[in-house]
Image (tube, rainbow, N blue to C red; front, top):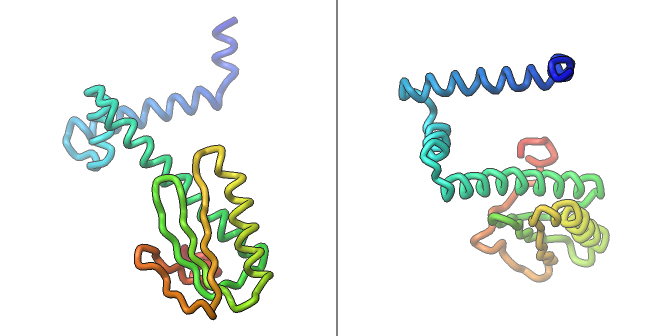
Length: 162
C-alpha cells in the first residue's frame, strides 16, 4: 500500500529527484571550489550549523522578495487607478517602503489614487509584516525630494523597465 502511494505521486517524485540531483551537482562544485560565492556561504553555514547566518540570510531574502512584490503591486495599483503624480521617490528598508509623491495642486483624483493604492497594498502585505507609508505634496509646496529617497521615473514604470 505504501509503495502504491509513493508510485502514484509522479510530480512529487520528480521534484525530489530534481532536488537531489541539484544538491549533488552543488556538492561537486563545492568540493571543486568552483561554486558561486553566495551559494558556498549558504552551504557552509548549513554544514557548520551557523544558525545566525541562516536566519539573517532567510530574513534578507524574504525581505527582498516581499519588498519587490509590494512595490510592484503598488505601481500596478497606481496604474489601474490612472494616477498621474508628477514625481515619485522611494526609500526602502527591511519591512517598509516610504513613498514621497508630488502631485498637481488640488489634484484630488491623484491624491485619492495614491492613498487608496497604499491602503490596498498595505492590506495585502501587512500580514507578512510589510507596508507602505506615503507623503504626498503639491507643486505649490515647492519641496524637493528628500536626499535619502531615490526618485523613480514613471515613464520607465509605464514601459515595464522597473
